[in-house]
Image (cartoon, rainbow, N blue to C red; front, side, top):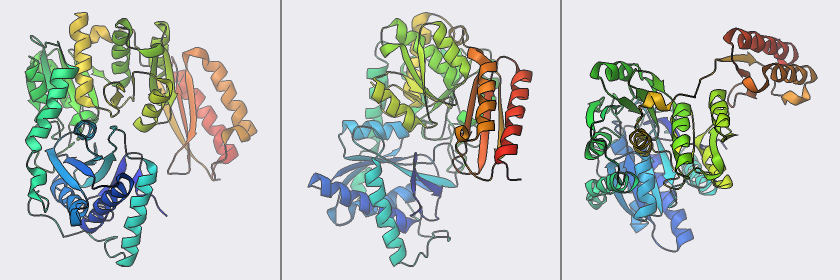
Length: 466
């Protein structure tokens, strides 16, 4: 059976299986039923969505399924960030939080992400049960929706029970109060000029309101969602406009979110990008000084630049690496009791505050580091050097473990010896294609280019398609 839920929920083109209205209703009904069976009562569900034009009707369909026959009780926060729903799920409390969003994807896509009351993503076992119910109904109905665009869309954004929408504003205010009153307690941004790129997404109203409440002078951009412009040439994947605007405004810094604001990237006063690695460097130093960096550890993925590892090591801190994905970062944070982790893309997790990556929470903590240090963002990033990187893909006939191919194993050892502690080799297979990926970081671009091509040639001889 093909898995519908990936590491970041169920995602696809809105209106096509599995994001047609009938299947979404089945998903809502299935979640409510399985939660009721485990709880022995009707579950409480909170939902929210980003600004895509498909968000309202998908949320409506999901709630129709969940509410059918009194199977669940539900409230909607309307347009809110993904971490906002995760927060509400654990504080209302609710038995599940459901987000309708496709994060940084274009507006044609959408998705369903489900959080447990802890704020963690739904467990795999329940996701598999929902998938089974979806495929059972899909088979029973003959699979008619599989390749067709669903025309059954709502004219408004309300579920069958209008009460679900009645307290949306209050729920969003609850989340803002958490960020502004608790996370940002004692923080004043008076005198700080900040440019915000809201990606025409879920943070369009929330982020400017939060920063203004804390006293910052806010220049808000890409904050006029029309249902189709989410992430379009803006946000964390397209920071060039923000970088220019920060310089033009003479701002102290800028911040860019993605469509559901679970990630944030920053720009310093010079217009230089401060990615997730540099953000972790700044945050780690501040937390270490305050005694909040448990064990002096930072958790990141195998894709984080070796410059972060070297910078942390220079201050007596350690970098732990995981597979790519915030899910794996969170697992390692909880396993080791660490208090800071994240990805180069801007997903930053503070497990003592939230088990979900939260761009607005990250912004508050970064701005606290700036204010309390009395230093600019560019000064705080000093000591972190992003090392040159090269990535070469090699098409292979089969994915044999590299250590089992003697020539490849020997060549890999030689590359690592050549790089020493001043460089890094990451050799892995693509998860979706028959590709071997050779990624090397080091001090010299010319050297790592040569090493990468040499290792790629060995892989082609040993494993190439021919």
